[in-house]
Image 1: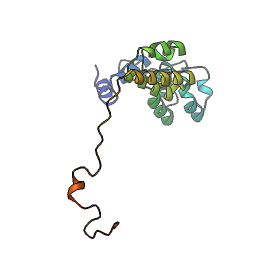
Image 2 (image 1 turned 90 degrees about the vertical axis):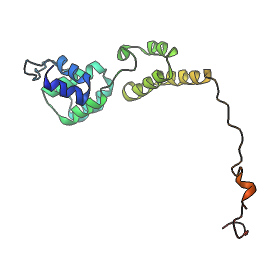
Image 3 (image 1 turned 60 degrees about the vertical axis):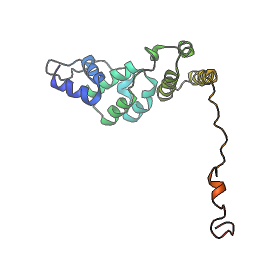
Image 4 (image 1 turned 180 degrees about the horizontal axis):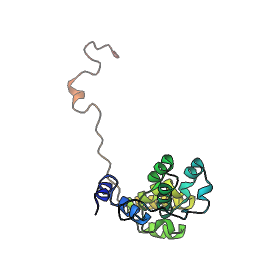
Length: 175
């Protein structure tokens, strides 16, 4: 492990080293230029078009786009957006799953997984079918949980009501 990769791991987590290794570092740790664009039409998009369309791509494509962008155009706003968009998939291979496969995986999911799928889908896919199923599964999960007993009624005045006058020292009603 080089000093640079140790610093990168500490600042950005161990996944950052994997990204640089997958991009292809030479023996001195400098990135090797990627010759293929990460997806069709990448080089024709201006900065704004590219940033607006990033949510339509999988994590694998975003990783490739980040490597390509660093080696070619190195536009800081694009790199910042790519870093924001990159994230851990809520289920293994999530981006490659169909709506039906995601729904099947949600049927046995715990609450934390359901919430991760919802957050990830809102940020990246925003597919109405998946979001509707997440809501349905969430409500089903909540309905299956035992209800907590409601606390007993306690008047707001409680013990103070019998010992102190409500109207205050003057007894004239509202202050």
